[in-house]
Image (cartoon, rainbow, N blue to C red; front, side, top):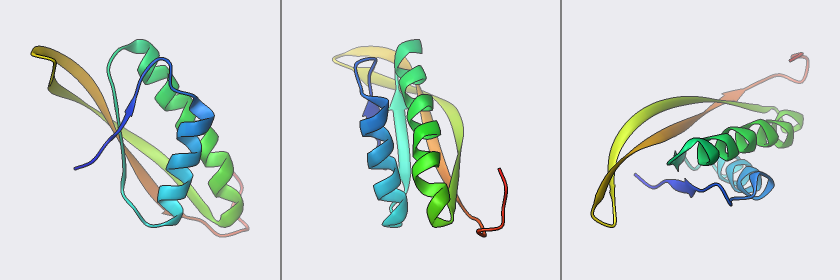
Length: 94
């Protein structure tokens, strides 16, 4: 499974654009972040992406899980975030 890898230096607006584009194209979206700063950027990106998607009848939520990964020979714990898509009617208020 492919992941968008998020770092503390990632731009939430840029990630949000990628998330929104993938959702509109029907591509599954999964994020991977290591560290509090990266998780913060990822969650901000999901919030921003909601603003891009709600006007076109789509909403998203996320489901985080822990994952053990290996980075350059070191074992680390990552947060993997599955982005879930919801179709909404134009009459829905959020």
